[in-house]
Length: 231
View 1 (cartoon, rainbow, N blue to C red):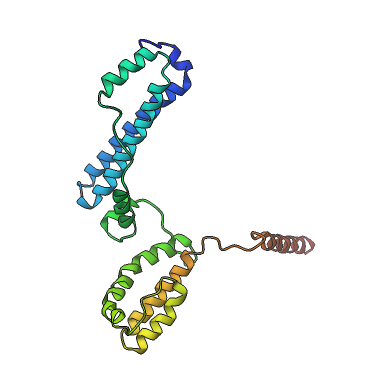
View 2 (view 1 turned 135 degrees about the vertical axis):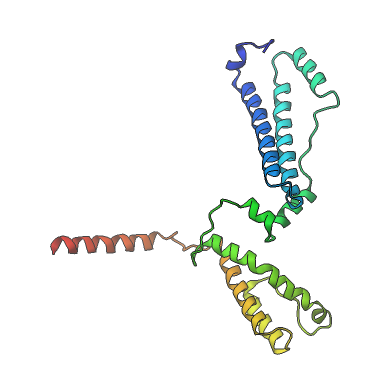
């Protein structure tokens, strides 16, 4: 403010970077408050750490842009030396922490429930989000079956559990024939495979993007309307 005064308002890129820094400070405060309000659970530490590290890194980028583009170079050098005598700190979060976050998001439990609290998850049979949630809920039980059959796989009694849901039914029948799993396990695997097939249909659409069906529905609606008018 001493060097730019009112000119700061006209230099919108600089003021925007200052706003970015303020926004990251708000993110840090909100992350710490959420972690504190939830009782500082150890299972949420990866989430809190990632949130803080990412906010600090984004603030660093804004600081670097601010100092690099500050019009008064002497003042910029002085600010950099005073604020960051050992260099601008804070690197991006490491892969190990990102892996912890990914595992937490794929594991049913209190930490994940707190993370998605307030999010709407439909219970409708045909809802894709509901398929994903049901698949997630069944995954630990499927993993337990896979672990239980590890010795049978090593001894050659059964092939490893396939990754493709389309191959699960044949694999479970083969395992049941060898009495390695019971009827409950077979039903569980079939249900898991059904939800898995639905969940991976990310590009499942007709060649005309549904235009023909939409036209047919519109035509049928017009015919009904005309029939009602004639009556």
